Length: 254
Image (cartoon, rainbow, N blue to C red; front, side, top):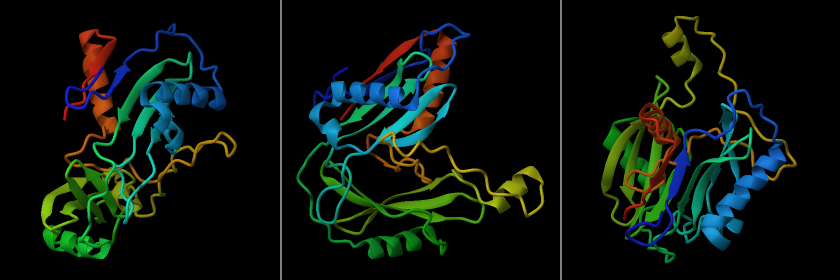
């Protein structure tokens, strides 16, 4: 479906791949990846040749990819190139989810606030002295360019802040996670001893299938942006199943 603001395809998903309930997963990693790349190229166009393919994981025979575009500008930031997400059924190759996020602008805005300054602003705004839980992320959307800084917490959660990269003002604060909780956090939740092992890392693809290893960090938080997080997809899918619907078209609004 075309977005009402810029006329760009936004995305769509379906809750069932159409295969019989007893159908087995027969497609190889290479076949699934080829299907995903073809689908993204159809909706994203030539820009799909520049994205990085990251394997997020697999659940219920559905393989999930996140495809960020290259960071551009000085300093480099996301949002100036196309990105997308694709999920493919390993049973029959059906596209279960596809989204395309096209850039609002390809002209880098000036950045006056350094990464180090953004971290200091975040510490003051959140009152946290914990170390960074992920690399600070610079993103440009429309007429705004901002730093997204996330700090770890002892309970496995994160405190973060969106900092205007031009003025240094705090745009928002937020709490996320825990995505990969610490052993101490797991021990408190389960009542186990403090020696509870760290949960296993997410699955990674074979080295020759053209996909980078799954990142240990969740998809970039984009408060106020248009990147759709996978938990939203999960909730929406549950709603669709309950309603008996098989397909819903999402509109991207600007």
